[in-house]
Amino acid sequence: MNQSIKVKSPEGITQSFNFNRLRTIYGPTQRPDPVEISPARERSKTVEKEAVATPPAPKREFIEEPDFSAPVKPITEFAGRSDFPKCAYGAHIEIAGYPGVVVEIVNQSVKVRSVQGVTRSYNAPGLRKLYGQG
Image (tube, rainbow, N blue to C red; front, side, top):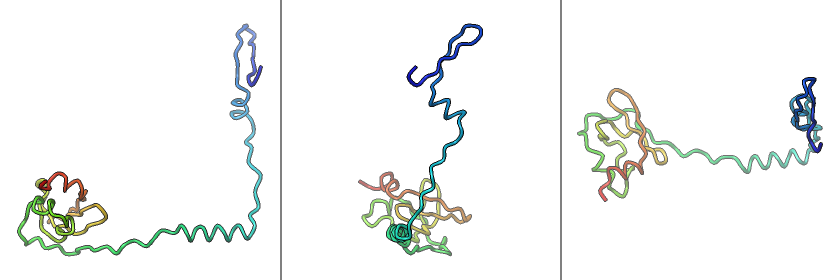
């Protein structure tokens, strides 16, 4: 009946099964025929890959040896400025009780390293929203 098969057991119970589903479960796997690729097609794929190549990553500025002897300043001094987070680069700051030096700025992330060597990342727009004045 349409795409289903009805089976009646010796006990008299009738059950329906979808033909396509039975083929998927119990039938042999059907693999697509291999397609030959012409040399011209291979060259066009190479050109496409070269065109889609990712641009080189920007040069990262990173402070290897941060200066922890500078006085600790609260993040509120920097977050409200228009040049934040660049103005905080290399500064010894405190964010929510975590003191450290801003050792790197990557995209919208501020990397802060503590005296113990632990580095935390903070979202710059989030810091501006939380600690910026206005």
